[in-house]
Image (tube, rainbow, N blue to C red; front, side, top):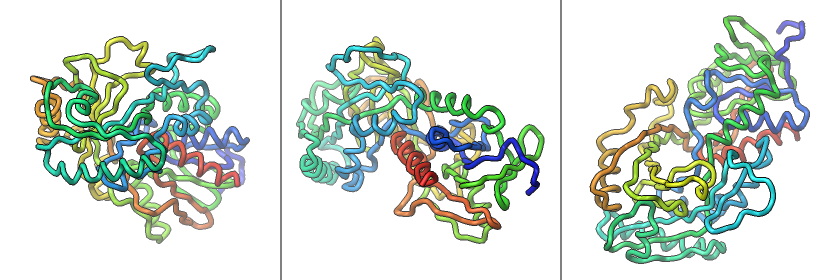
Length: 408
């Protein structure tokens, strides 16, 4: 490492893509740390790996654990999101009057919506699914989440886009969970951190990033650069960072801690034939459904875009379909995807036709019990941060925690 001072020298180096390194940078900057951000992509959100809500899928007893449900409450989510955002984070709840004072309609919103899980008697595996929902009813009731059991049309008519007049359905309703404006939140944090760091310490398209004694080496704008790192090097493990992490672990001759796999998700945007109720997020089979909106639904006018989040297969992390970006994942969806959408629209919602507006593919790591892990290259110690994609409030929570560990 040369002894001449480099403009990139910093207390902490953050290597990764997505929201997590930006939130960690924001927190560290507020504590007076000098920060270097290295992103191997030309866009922080190319893999689009933050979700606006917790899908709470698959429908298992673990998935509907009361602690996990409580983490989806608006008060909990606002407490996670507000400290790292350089401005207001607004909230919306149906039928609640806004308090006096300034409100920013362009700010990211945390929207309180009921969550409804519904099954039909004719649905495959309906009996087993209903047993799980009954167990969730007991657990969430004991946790004070005020669940309700609904039957028949009382259940189905609350589901976004439902258009039938009869049917044998049963549902579990939790009245107070939420969903978040992901794009507004991400872009606000991005602009704040980029402005604070400037071009020298906020490096996009960083190539050939290598850990070396006392810091990191990388290429940018066709030139090689080195940076001393005094405190910590943090690497945020999202699907696009997997090849780099595997390469560094091999170089350090350590066994990397890997996730169970990469869950492929599809977020479809459909055009509803009727106006949509923004108050409920519905779950049917392996699909999560809600009225798509930015900001406050009360001021959005007619809502006719139905978001459908579909859980796809879990693939081996080394296959890594997200390594080359969403441009390489346009064909993730299959005949099974279209059959699933058709079943939702024709068999359950009872539409006579549906139109697809768009589909966003997502790749999100699924972890077991393993947490963050370290490895050394020469004398440089690197911490790999896990669980930094998925529901946006979980991403922010993990980024806060790892930044606080650096400060300890």
